[in-house]
Image (cartoon, rainbow, N blue to C red):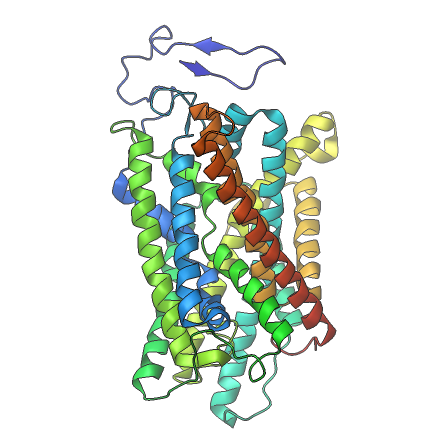
Length: 482
C-alpha cells in the first residue's frame, strides 16, 4: 500500500499496485518507483563518503585539547552514539512497521510520519539551520585553503620565517563568484559525477594529512604531548582549557554528522533483505571504518604536532615540506568544498523557490525563464528569480563568513547545534513512538538519559565555540589566514 502526499487537506489517496496493474512489473518496487538496486557495499560506501570530509582536518587539534586519555575516549563515544542512533533511525525508514510499512523518502518525512507535523517543522528548522551553517563553514574552509596554497609557495621561496600573508576576504569573494555561477544551474542534482569527485577529493586530502603526520613522526621530531592535552599555565590558561575542551567536542561532533542523509541512503537499497537490517550493518561498517581513519588522523596528528597542533593541519603550517604535496592537499579541499557547497545549498534553494511559487503562483518574475546561448556551453535556461535569490543567498553567507572566518570555532558551532537534534533526539523519539515505549519504563528512562546527556554536551560545545568566535573576532586581522 502506498499513500500520496499531494492531496487536498484532510484527504489521503491510497492505492494498491496490483489494482493499478503494476504489481506484476518486476522493474518497479512496492511504491511504484523504479526498482532499487543498492546493496550493503554501496550503502557502506555512501556512508563513508558522507562522513569523511573537512571535519577530519580539525581532529588533531581536538585531541590536543583533550589529551591521550580523554581524546580517543570522546572520539569513540561519539562514534558509538552515532552508530546506535543511526540504527534506531534505520528502523524508521518505513512506518509504522519497520519492514512492511510505507516508505519515507527523507529524514523529514520519517519525523512527520512518527512524530507529527509540529515535530516535523522543528526538524526542518534544525535541518535548514545546519545546511546554512555548513555552507558558511565551507566558505571559510575553502578560503583558508586557497590562502594556504599562496602561503606555502611563499614559504618555499622565502624561508619558513618569512612574513607570508594571504587575504581571506579576497578568496571568499572568488569562492562566492564561483558559487553564484554554479547556483544558476537548474538541474544541479543531475551532476551525478560530483559525488564521485567529492569522495575522491576528501579521501585524498585526508590521506595526505595522515601521510604527512606519519612522515613527521618517522623523521624523529618529538612534539610535547600529555595525558591531559594542552597544559594549563604553559599552553593555555585554566579558562582557555575549559572553553577549548568544550569546543573540541563540537569539532568531533561535526566530523560525525551524516544523519541528515541516512534515510536517503537507505532509500537506495533493494527491498530484500529488509532495508533496515542492511542499513544497520552498513552503518556499523561505515562508522567503524570512519572511526579507525579518524583515530589515525587525530592520534597521529597529535603525536606529530603535540599540544601546539594547528586547528587545520593542512593550512596551519605544521607542515612546510614537501610544499607541492601540501598544495595538492589544499587544492583537493577547495575542489571538494566548491561542489559540496552546492549539495548543501540546493535543498535551501528548492524550499524557498517552491514556497515563493506557491505563495505567488501568477507572478511573472517567479515563473519566467529564458534560454540564453552560452559560448562552448550551448543553451542555458536563465531564471530572473533564480538569479536574484540564489545570488543573494551566496552573498549573505559569504558576508557572514567574512565576519567570522574562524575554521575551528565555526565547525565546532555547526557540530554542536546539529548533533543533538538530528543525530540523537529525533531518532530516539521516533524509535520510542514506533515501539510504543511506556513512560518511565527502563527503556524510556535510559533513552531519555542518553538524549539529555547529549543535549548537555551539545550546549557546552556550542558555548565553547561561541566563546572562541568572540575571542578570535576581537583579535582578528582581516588580511591574515586564520
